[in-house]
Structures are given as structure tokens and as C-alpha cells.
Image (cartoon, rainbow, N blue to C red):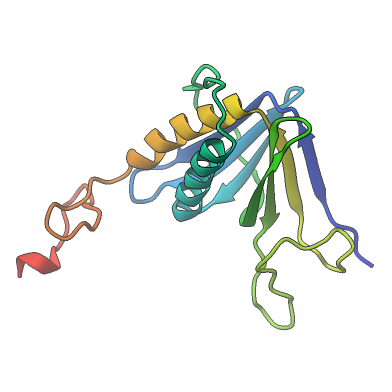
Length: 177
């Protein structure tokens, strides 16, 4: 039986979304820092948007009134070496600690007879992909939302006619033909 790589990072010092590259070619990362160690996890822009929305929903549901931690505007720490690309993600409200548990499982391919996981696998599942587990406060979640919202918006501006992103060298708008 193969053992699963588990990143258990409770009470982290930093939990942020950041990018590397130019708009249109940006790579998105969640970066976590705990006790001086930095871990980076790659994800898609759409996943970053969905995660940010889910954090907003959760904070509304738990009626958190705790303010955001001071906004972290510092760049991602270098070098960025992704531990793995995030696939399935889950957020859970932990009533006892009043904290949010984030779980992000490595994306799995569909080559050959490899198993595709479209939900979080249990740690006992043979061949379960690596997983990141962290707990953050509601103020860290609010700070993540603030930063993630501006990082996501910092991409290419949308075309006013078709809504597609406009590259620095322009774009061919299907609505203008």
C-alpha cells in the first residue's frame, strides 16, 4: 500500500493567492507559510475564483464579524516550486475552534489505469493523491478574499462587446464582424 503525502499545516502564518507571469499567461498559486517554511500549490484561475466565492459564502453563513487581518500585499516568496497542482478542494467550518479547514487534493491525470479522484479520497485509499490540510481564522479568510479578488481582477481587461479578455496586442472580437 502506498502512503499518502499529507501536508498538515494548522495555524499558518500566511495563506495567500498570488500569480507569476504576465496577464494572459499568469500562473496562479496558493502560498502557505508556517514556522518559516513556505509551501506553494498551483491552481487554475477558475479554481481561485470559485474558492474565493466559497470563502465569502462561508463567512456569510457563519455570520463572522471578525475583521480582516491586515492585507498582505507582499509578493509570493521565491523560488516558487509547486508541491502539486490543486484539484478537488473543500472548506469546512469547525465549530469547536471557530476556524475554517481548507483541504486541497492533488489533481490526478487520466492516463492509462490511473484512478481519477473527483472527490477527496480518504487517507486509507490506496494510491490516494497528496493532500494539503490547513486551518485558518475567519480574519485570514477575509484577508485571502481581499487579496484574491484584486489578484484575479488584475488580469486582461474584458472586451466591452463580447466579454472575452483583450490581449496586450488586441483581440479579434466575434461581435465586431
